[in-house]
Length: 351
Image (cartoon, rainbow, N blue to C red; front, side, top):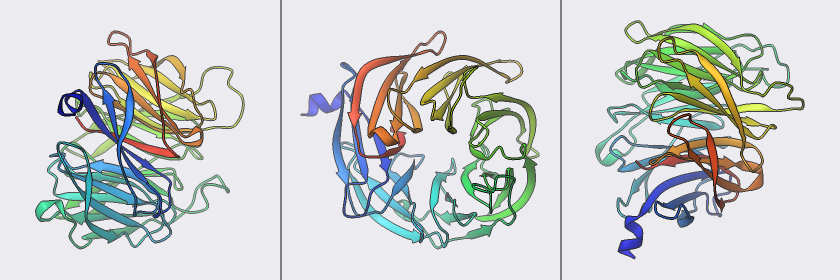
């Protein structure tokens, strides 16, 4: 068993499940064969839809996406990946769908989609959660009557410096930068997106100069210059996530940058594809290069494992599909392996 485990790369999977069902899965990918398996599963939490590892990889934080939202803290068994519940705290908001951790590991951030609010929790001894240190509610609405009738904080992401926390509010078509001051959120800047675009998730480039936002409702990615000193986003480009001539309904979902910093990927629900962009290393602008079928339905989330394996969580076909990233051009090739998981919606690799 020990020899087999040494070849495994672990990853965690968040799903939509009731508390009496397995909801968090510990996946293992064999680095020699590419095969995937479920090593463990954990029940006891409703809709553990988004997960984030602590910087030291000792703990996993989980958003419970329910009407009375919670954030939970689990201690990891570093050898097997098993999880042990340590703590849980109310977000005092509805449908928390995103959780993140500052680079120093001192603060856990959460965003509540349905109630349009955001939270900060201090991290205590053994990575437990302290009492909430910040709670902020957005107000207003956007252009789309069906999806933007009020604020919908879809993600909250610390910037690389840890000085700022950036919230994408799908309902307001705004990206709001907060100063993170001793666990408090202080409004710093607001960046307006095109009306009806619905900003969802944001990623920072490893060089700290660029940031990218995926806009759910109009299926685009926005490229920004990022001034880390001033905490300021400046729009560089809007580019479609869909192939030319695409017809039919669909919404964009997730966004990731390759470890090498040269490629950006985004997922399309409806088209059920991953789009590959090449990142201009001088300007940060994007060029759409290729679209790859996710071999499943509704790719809500995806992530990159060590060794250049990209895993896609296809929510409505109940599977995780593995692709190999080409080191030269970033193109994706199916490895031949899939993993059956009920309603997977988040993948977090363990480096």
